[in-house]
Length: 101
Image (cartoon, rainbow, N blue to C red; front, side):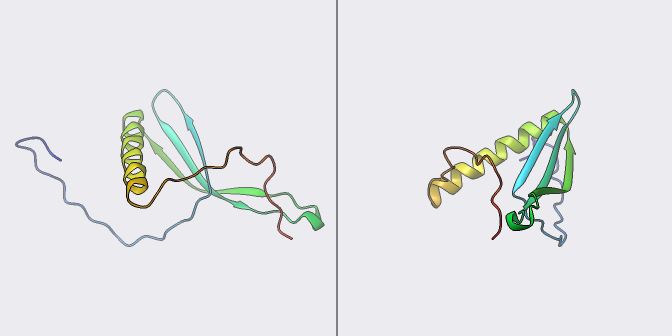
């Protein structure tokens, strides 16, 4: 939504490769927020291989934009739960990543 007298920017959505993420690590400095997205690569217990998180995408943004992203995401989650149902979270995070048998 633009203010009176301001033009709205043209929005162009190019076809992009989608990346699936099961993990997001967030860090910050005084001038930016850093989001690292990745996926859990399960370990194989029988081979004594530990699970790994492979981070594939880093997004750096200003604190102001990070707060706007939070507000948009919060709104979308509220709409999702209103239309589809409550999103249930596990009561406690797992202590160890699951191993693949």
